[in-house]
Length: 316
Image (tube, rainbow, N blue to C red; front, side, top):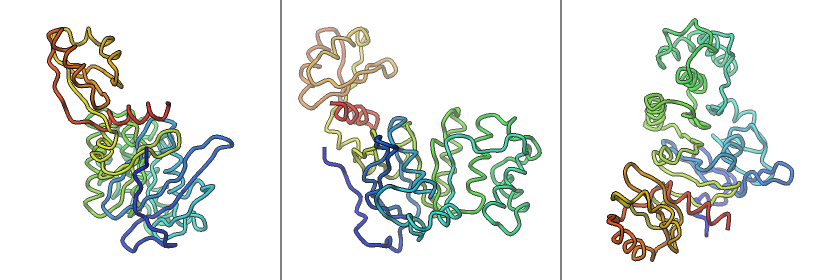
């Protein structure tokens, strides 16, 4: 399948309005390909998703853009700094939040924030720490050791630390991993607020439902980008169709449905069965549904459906 490529151009420097622009970035770990041919640009206010299964290359791509890992190939600029020659400057100016908690467990919430403010060279680190604690609702825990915070509050502290220097570009690796629904909503509320202020955000996530919140995305599989565009464009590019099968015997038909030529996947969705298939499969599915008292309804293809198609093609 032809990859959907971003229009980044071949200029040595990014467009004036872009926060970053990279071309053909690649990284290997020995013989293993981690990322191949990463090319895209991000404008202020954009929320770009690196989407795909764990181990697909999302974290490696994010760490290259953060100036932490040096690419083996490719070029680009991040916040006006050359990615290959000025990674230290990039690390000073981006807001990077790792998937693993990067907090000092024995230090208090306020001490963690003050330490991060000092690392970024802020003129008044204590004042910056107090302001960040207030902005993120951490006042009540200011003197509590970070190691005693619940998962949601620890992730909130980590996000506050990543944003304490008011970066124009924020890189978040699985920012909602392990969080409950209200905590995930809070993280995405803040991501939306950053974008509204003109901050560029890149979110690496394996959660395809959350990836649909992004304004654009790249779908990773085993280091390669199989599709890119808006979540809707990626879903359409899969070239698949989707259905819901409702009825008393729907769940019992799972094995027979999977044997229908053209069916790529099926799984429960509420009281129905969701089916992802190649175009041209509808008539066979409809006959099977009718024969067993079921009701087959076409539905829009989602990003999760597209992921099943892409991964199946990649494995073939």
